[in-house]
Length: 515
Image 1 (tube, rainbow, N blue to C red):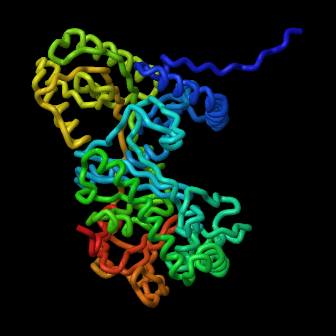
Image 2 (cartoon, rainbow, N blue to C red; image 1 turned 180 degrees about the vertical axis):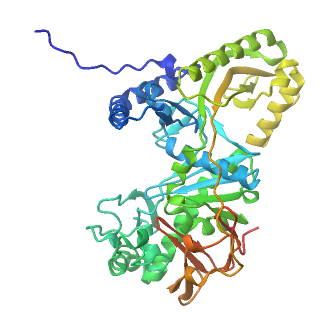
Image 3 (spheres, rainbow, N blue to C red; image 1 turned 180 degrees about the horizontal axis):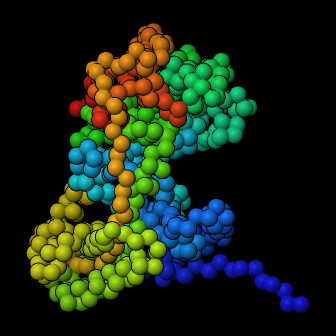
């Protein structure tokens, strides 16, 4: 009897990255081949489960662009799901911005092991065509379209320790879910950011996960004293405060990386904070940067799942095409864009999820003649339809000035690649409004006072706590205060002013924001 051979997973570079730079294409293909078999089996398992449950609709997954694609494609082009969860969070932040009339915002997501940030600028999510995975020194370049997200290894489970030079470090090592922070009582002995929040009173021992999980403040204090306080000559409270201050500074780098490094003024943006730990630290991060406004959406611990509901089908295509702008054949450009659009429309047609409309956006990677690396610029249809070389050049100069602080309008430029994103726009759910109340929260929303330590205070402050599900639109709460819900706690620092908007978002005006 013939032996049945195992199914071999094959990755082809032309299916993943249709542009030049051979090392980047190779590393992208290798990464896809490495994760492919496990991801393929995982997705196939979900498909079997859906079939057994008699689900007859299309099964779609989120890509790194924040768009959706078919399960069959996900099983072979797995790398396109890199950072798909955080990408969905940024898409959710964009949906929130559109509902609230905000043009510019920074989406900040903090969970148990890391913190991430992405940007909505002029109403659109900022994207990139490549990323480095694993840090610059040992990075693996991945050449796929994706939302431009920067990540730092600071989360609720990040471990705090005194290094060989006597300095306090927070992360990137994490206690994980098992054994977890010392306060979980599961065998963890090293102090974490969560332990520091508990010691300072920002988390309640009996209110974690809506009271489903009891925390041990005594265990947190022992861990912080042994590993940070005594080695550094600090009290437990001083050590816990130091842990949170260093964590806030580290997380502010993620926000600056996606804004300042693009030439954007982060202080002029609104911070949208989510993830289980994001609302605990967002006000401190906003102060660190000088931001004046913070929004905590409803159910922040599940906000990335919320963002998936606002994702559209999306297919990205790129074609390497070298030409000096002043000599470019616009007939050839139009032909290439038409071919890319046709590929995208064919993919949408085969998805099984009929979109209500199709949107095509075009872009070009451009650089000055003699440069090595390019920047992507959007190409509105009117520019290349009119063959407006001067308009395209001005657009490129403006983007280069924004990204690098310099431009050369008198220098010749060239096109490197042409890009097209074809989106199948789906019907999106409306945002639900909440009942309206008075300026003062209902008495039933008040959950008692708790002593909380804040930086600079010599003693704990009796801080009111509120149950978020009982707050109404129009309620106003001055800081300090704690707003508690099942999967998160929002810290309203002294000087902050919180107001609940019509959709149930916590809108916080940051007090004493740095200029």
